[in-house]
Length: 357
Image (tube, rainbow, N blue to C red; front, side, top):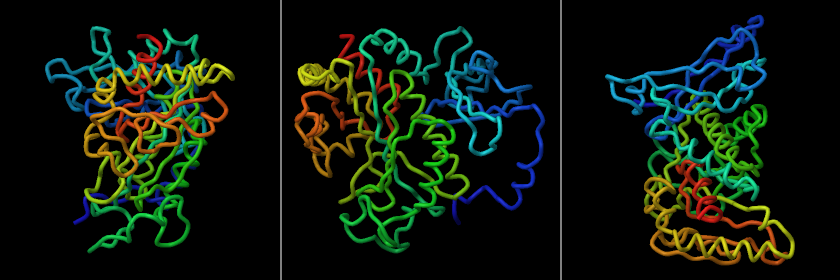
């Protein structure tokens, strides 16, 4: 029996979504739970808020989300960012929240609070980020979407940026997510099919400072939420299939105003790489779960145990794009983060290592 089914009946829901809701607004409060997953619940507002300052603090049962014990279970939601709601439309909104304990301190799952502090400390350097979110689609039976039920597709090669039946799977789902991100206000910059069939990537950025984490988390929420309607389960596991198949990462492009300055940028990039090398293991520790299954030195990855850097080298820890090396300024790409990395953690430690150490 399938463990996952599509949960939206468009023919049944459409008449109700068309009903006038007056001046009331539905606000979907969204937060990161104790396992790095996403949760949400809805509040009715009397009118549309002008900013997050107009939104109420809310709470939830943290003992049911891995964020608090049962005898002291209230965890508080503090709104931090507003996006348009592509599911309900109209004036309805999606509200990204931080989680706080009842003593006013950030919950153990809240990595945004520390990231925000680091971004404030480094704001004069104008840190920009662009994250490449890879993921794999699974169907209702828990199998990779579109793969033969009793076998495997042909070997990797024709699927990356592929076109045509048998080479590309679930493009309608991908397009739905892309358009939902654009509507919501997520700074999504592109999509492409990846090396393994039914593996895809979307890119978010460039975003400055804390916005990077906010926008990637919202893009992930939309991905999972649309998956409910398609009966598709997107996986962020960095190595969802063993064997000769590519894993999934979250390559992190990073620059500062110094790196982007003509005539001086390359020196700043090289200085940052030296600092990153010295703290390789500290970065690996926060770059996602099960990343050792992906960073093997094969399938366009570096070894998890060693640090390397190179121009146009997709087998290195840090890649300097060829055009950046040629022009002498721009950005670097950290290829180590896993697809399930918390974007607040990766952006925070990049700033901390290169600018605040």
